[in-house]
Amino acid sequence: MQTKPEETGRDREQQVPKDGGSVLGSLKKCVFVLGSALLCLVAARNTITWHVQGLWKASDSFWQHQWGLVYDLFGEDEHLLGTLGTLLVPSLVFWLVNGFLLVVDMTGQPAALLRYKIQEEKNVPVDPVKLWKTVKLVLFNQFIVTGLVIFLTAPTLFHWRGMPCGRELPWFHWVLVELIVFVLVEEVMFYYSHRLLHQPAMYKRIHKKHHEWTAPIGIVAVYAHPVEHILSNVLPVAAGPILMGSHVATVWLWFCLALTTTSISHSGYHFPLLPSPEAHDFHHAKFNQCYGVMGVLDRLHGTDEQFRRNKAYERHIMLLGLTPLSWSVPDKPKVSKETLSCRKMSCHESSCHQTSCQSPGVLTCGQAEDKNGKTN
Ligand SMILES: [Zn+2]
Ligand SMILES: [Zn+2]
Figure (cartoon, rainbow, N blue to C red):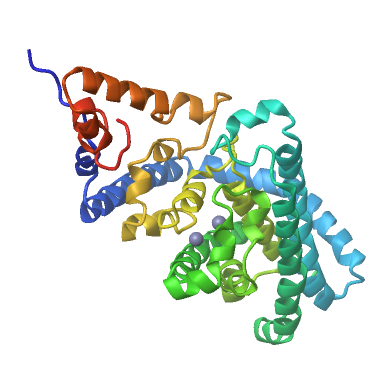
């Protein structure tokens, strides 16, 4: 009776379409999804517009009132709003989000959240010496480096873009359009600057610092050499608002969103109802995969091939239930030393020589591991 041969790493590799095919496949899927969404939107346009406008009118005066309070708090000083406000407000949100993550990392409480860890055995608990070193550089980057960038460039930028920091908030629809532009600009600028930082000379001198954490935690999002912080953190996020001449309230909203999502990407936890952090966590674990934010350019350039062959790719979705994805999509079990010695014994028993068991020949005897020594 013939048995089905074991699937090897090479077989799995062949199941993944080559770059050209996968790009075409992705584009087809993208067109299908966007086309279907567009059709639904066109069909329900009047109803949606009516509801959104109703909702916005109701909340419009609320947000306008809140913004008026902030505007007054800064003494109606629009330069101060654009500089000090832009420095402090996103930083405050960053530390609120990361304050919570740090409590979980340092205390392991609430224990129920630990089940959502991506690299299970890492940072439990986090090393306090490494953590303090990280906190110091994060604060330096946030308040000294970013502060210098903001205060030194503000006069030129305000002169060029006309200081859009007024009491009137922009239109809700316009804010949405701007956010889409910001996301696209960030994806392009972050992907290519990040790849540049992985060039050997740049990696050794600059980017290696960020990769000291192979299993990152939230604040590692801003743990980087100051040059990297300006090139790859500040510029890609600031370029969109500069390009669009955005209102300072939109800029704060965008910076808060960007800092929150990058903290989630570095958190090391795949929590329910939050964007998936699997791709960037994989980048920290493997170094040469998943350079982008959304993954579009990684797909186009084929820099996610190893990721797409990994179980992490199956988990790269928004978790909609409470069961951790590491439970529903578990990794393949690792081979323990006992199993290996057991295999050597069975190999020996089936009249192989012990020496051949210690060589790669044992893998052929067991017929259970691929060339890289990974178990199927
Ligand atoms: Zn990172
Ligand atoms: Zn990197």
